[in-house]
Image (cartoon, rainbow, N blue to C red; front, side):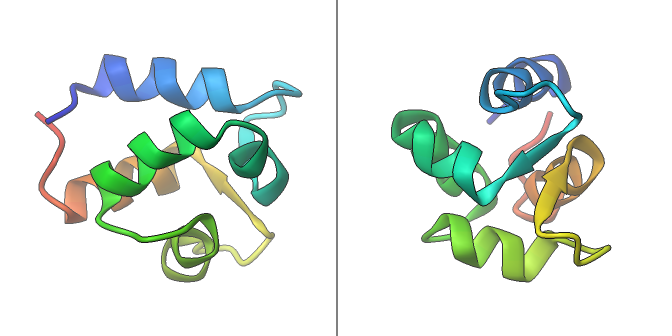
Length: 77
């Protein structure tokens, strides 16, 4: 289980260009962090994460979208 602060720290670590979004490239460039995201969201791959939780369909995940994914997986305290 992850706290919101831990999730924000993880998000910031993955957001390589600091644009407030995690792209598929960001996820592939950090396979260890990507694996943590997958386990926290109950997804099996970065592609699945984007397909399921990229609500605005811009090809990336914002912190709010990631937070929603983790909450749906019941892994956020």
